[in-house]
Amino acid sequence: MIRRRHDRDLDACVAVLAEVHTHSGYPHHWPGEPARWLTPDGLTAAWVAETDGAVAGHAALCGAEVSRLYVAPAARGAGLGGRLLDAVEEEAVARGLRPVLEVKATDTAAIALYERRGWLRRTTERQDWGAGETVTVHHYEARPAGPAH
Image (cartoon, rainbow, N blue to C red):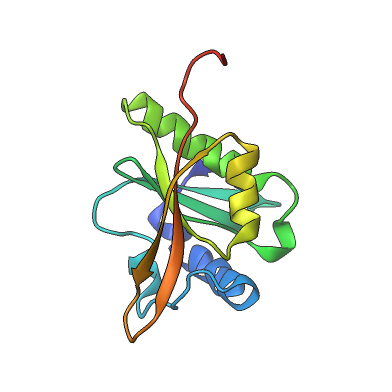
């Protein structure tokens, strides 16, 4: 089930985020205040995925940007990432926005999800993430709405 995130969900979201960080290295740098990281400035809305009544994934929309999208390692392969992405896209489109996102070039599972769903890679750049660390990031844009041509 995909639903809007409530404040009471934050502890469970942080626990799942910790699993994802250990398993997949997302987020790249563990935030000092993970609940605050899940509620960034400019947050439009956030959602959780639940399986058997427990939080198993999360996604957020900040303006037109899809952000903080992750699924617990044990819940992967069940389509939760795609369903979270659907919820974020629907909200963005309802607001008249074309959703965009950034993803590390090494995050091949996420890239595969976006490309399977028709997202378009617009640019790739190397970003300075501090302490002499440079990371390659792809910028994606949701497929245009409307009928396929």
